[in-house]
Length: 193
Image (tube, rainbow, N blue to C red; front, side, top):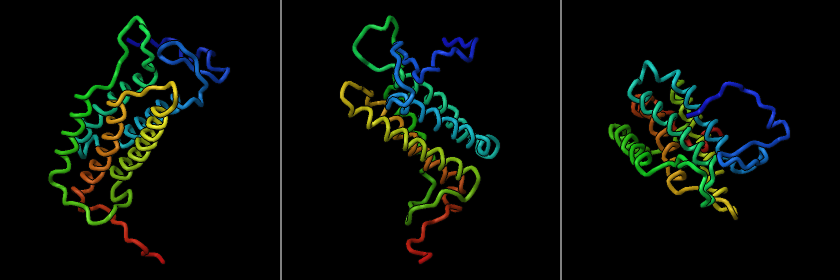
């Protein structure tokens, strides 16, 4: 349970923040950047949902589940697995969350024709917003992978799989809200030469 009764604490005024373990890190630390970018992707999904709430309630419900899971992912990243007993069981992304996303991707992708070209972000406000969220999720994934390769740092494999599937989901959802791909804007290589 999280209780936030005071929003500013002044503890970060020195440029550091606390991880879930209590350890303090610089706010530019790669781990902090990773979960901060996950939070940014979540905010982008919130903006996308302004366009999906009424027109695509099934997709909107999926996005709502993803937003909740992204907070789980942030908690996972904010509490590195050092092998030490924290006195509580830290929240971790699990395989069932990845599997659920894969099932949602498959369901949305089923009626969509295969791509014959790359697509440009756009076609509809909902699709443009979903593609923006996708690019931020990809950035979070790059940071998480970089973090996982840094000496002394750990990132759970399910966490990396999950953020990878989130961006895949957002791509397919962007096509789904574009009339199942019929309103996609196709890239035309060299068109403006």
